[in-house]
Length: 117
View (cartoon, helix red, strand yellow):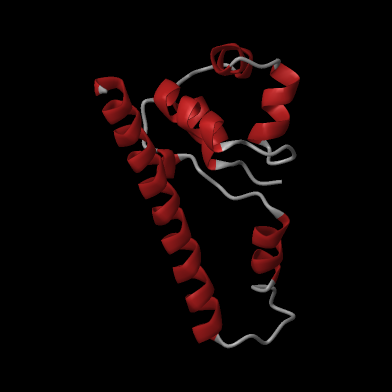
């Protein structure tokens, strides 16, 4: 399995898996499964990890869902799928990520507003 963006960023920041796991609040084995895409990472965990690594979520976020893996399989050289369909899928994936980021920002703003009340 190829290295994930999260793994590469953690290594770049010179943080051990065990350290990262402790900072996120989980056991090293659990963190390892999440980092490799075996276990799901919640949006809250993505937020925590991006803060620890001092990067935007987009720098580490990857969708490991089965749907995403199926889309990746569509790019197999054995399938003859027109490029415009693959390009549209890529566009929709980027747009979906942008919308998820916007939701996170709006949640942060809402938390700030609620604190003021």
